[in-house]
Image 1 (spheres, rainbow, N blue to C red):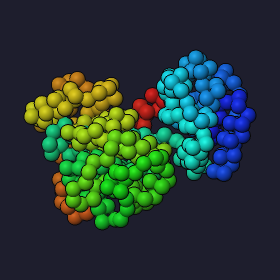
Image 2: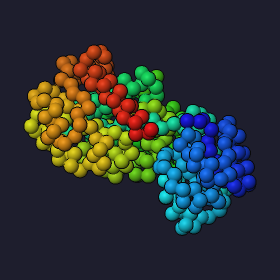
Image 3: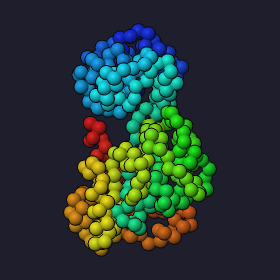
Image 4: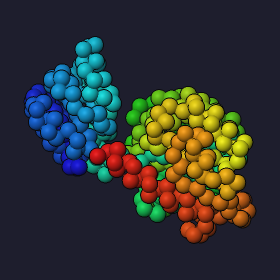
Length: 351
């Protein structure tokens, strides 16, 4: 993938404005004045700005869906442009000059090296007490060894991912701070604002009652998290609100942690039946009371990893030591295996 954003327009004024905003953000753009040339370059750039003047022509060529596509034009836009923007899977339609700050923000993310698309893994408990939050924390802890990683706690009624990670005393922004924000959220701004230690960050809940963030806020937060991190792990609730549903929809892969028992499998089956796009769902089996393959068959889903119960894990978490004390322990091995397989699958999907 080339590091330069692609501007597709034959409007010289629009091209000049895009170049000006890019220069102010410390980046250069590649200009393409025709739809045919744009289609040849479509998959490579981290960001594509499609001029309203060429949008209909680009849409008629049916380019493959991808992230990071925006439509840019002068003044107000009509219904035909909106339909064409939907056809190419554009994130939104930006009207200049009022959207100048938004375009500059997109370009600035590229300049900061934040134009990529990190892997987003959702984690769900198949039943109460399955250990999904602990497993999500383990994934994030190991992921941080390889690059910037964010654990998003979407379960307001859960044990608290911050407590499991041992980050609950570190200051930083929470959902309460982001819940009522509007507009585009910068990737670097989010990464630096959340509580973090080294490459591992956490977006969680403060103490007390908090109003759940609106779905549009949640989607913007997830988009910024994906741009600014190599890995995003989302601890999802079993009974999601509208915001958590938006997070679930945005996950590349969803892991359901299932207790290896009759009751655990039965509970997970009811949960799984409500999940959309089951082809991206995988099972992590915890415990040895039943064979992992049998659990997978009962759920009609592939098992991506299994692990035995780990002695002393609860005590270590209670002491603030985090979920990973030894990379040879069952939890760490199961988390490492899943990270490898998820990254391979994500690479196949992106190819």
